[in-house]
Length: 93
Image (cartoon, rainbow, N blue to C red):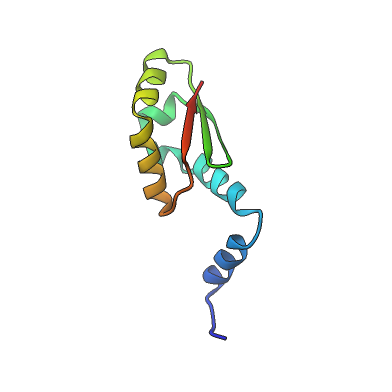
C-alpha cells in the first residue's frame, strides 16, 4: 500500500462516501463568482445541486433567458472548473 498526502486521503474518502455531492454543492456556492463571473454571480441566488441537476434562481428576466439559452456552455464551464462531470442539467428559475 502506498502512502498518500492528507489531501489525497481526503479525496479518496470523499469518493467513497455520500458526502461528495454536498461538498461539491458547497464549493460551488462559495466559488460561484469565480466560476460564472461577477455579473452573473451578482444577479443569481439560491444555487442548489442535487443529483447532478443544478438549480439557479434570478429575478432578472434577461439573465434568466441568457442562462437558459447558454445552458450547455455553463454546464461545460462548471464541469471544467471541477475537472469532472458534476452537472448534467440546469434549471433557471
